[in-house]
Image (tube, rainbow, N blue to C red; front, side, top):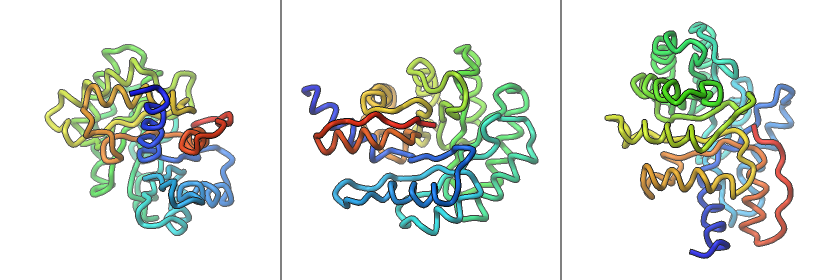
Length: 255
């Protein structure tokens, strides 16, 4: 496949697997309205993203403004990943009660001994919802710790392993992604588990690195929203530019 054709193919996959995200501390209702409009797209030919990701307090608003085919995800225990189970459960309950379909919870990455109980509690609290566990792989750093966190999350019933909050110095990296994908592929539940790359992914070229890794380690069939997501805000700008075949504006900061 020529490079232009590969870039176009990657843009289509990235759009179909994009969790369009707004997790800024200063987010207001108007920001979420704008996010939802972007998620649907002004041009029906472009296609919609599969999900938006917001703070729990905006779940009801996003759900009311989006068509049923776009899921609403929200974060729990975010961004610090504390070991406070009660706090994680409050966040999860708020998401469930507001009509969210997906919970992105941060593992207790500073205290992995506390992580199994926290994740088990959140899994019970959001039964029936898609649970993405954020490992904050850039903070774990050590491959052995990343692999351990993967195993804890998978054993607790995670539906997705997610790299990062995007709020620390190191977000998604290909090295961490490979470890996470290997953990998924080798787990007894692996055929039902997905991978989400998030943090610092601003261009289709960036996304293409993770698309290639998923294809290599989980197979071509995993390159759908059911098993692959990219969490970003500015990436959609570059996706649209590639699909339009025009100039590619600088992306805004991804979460």
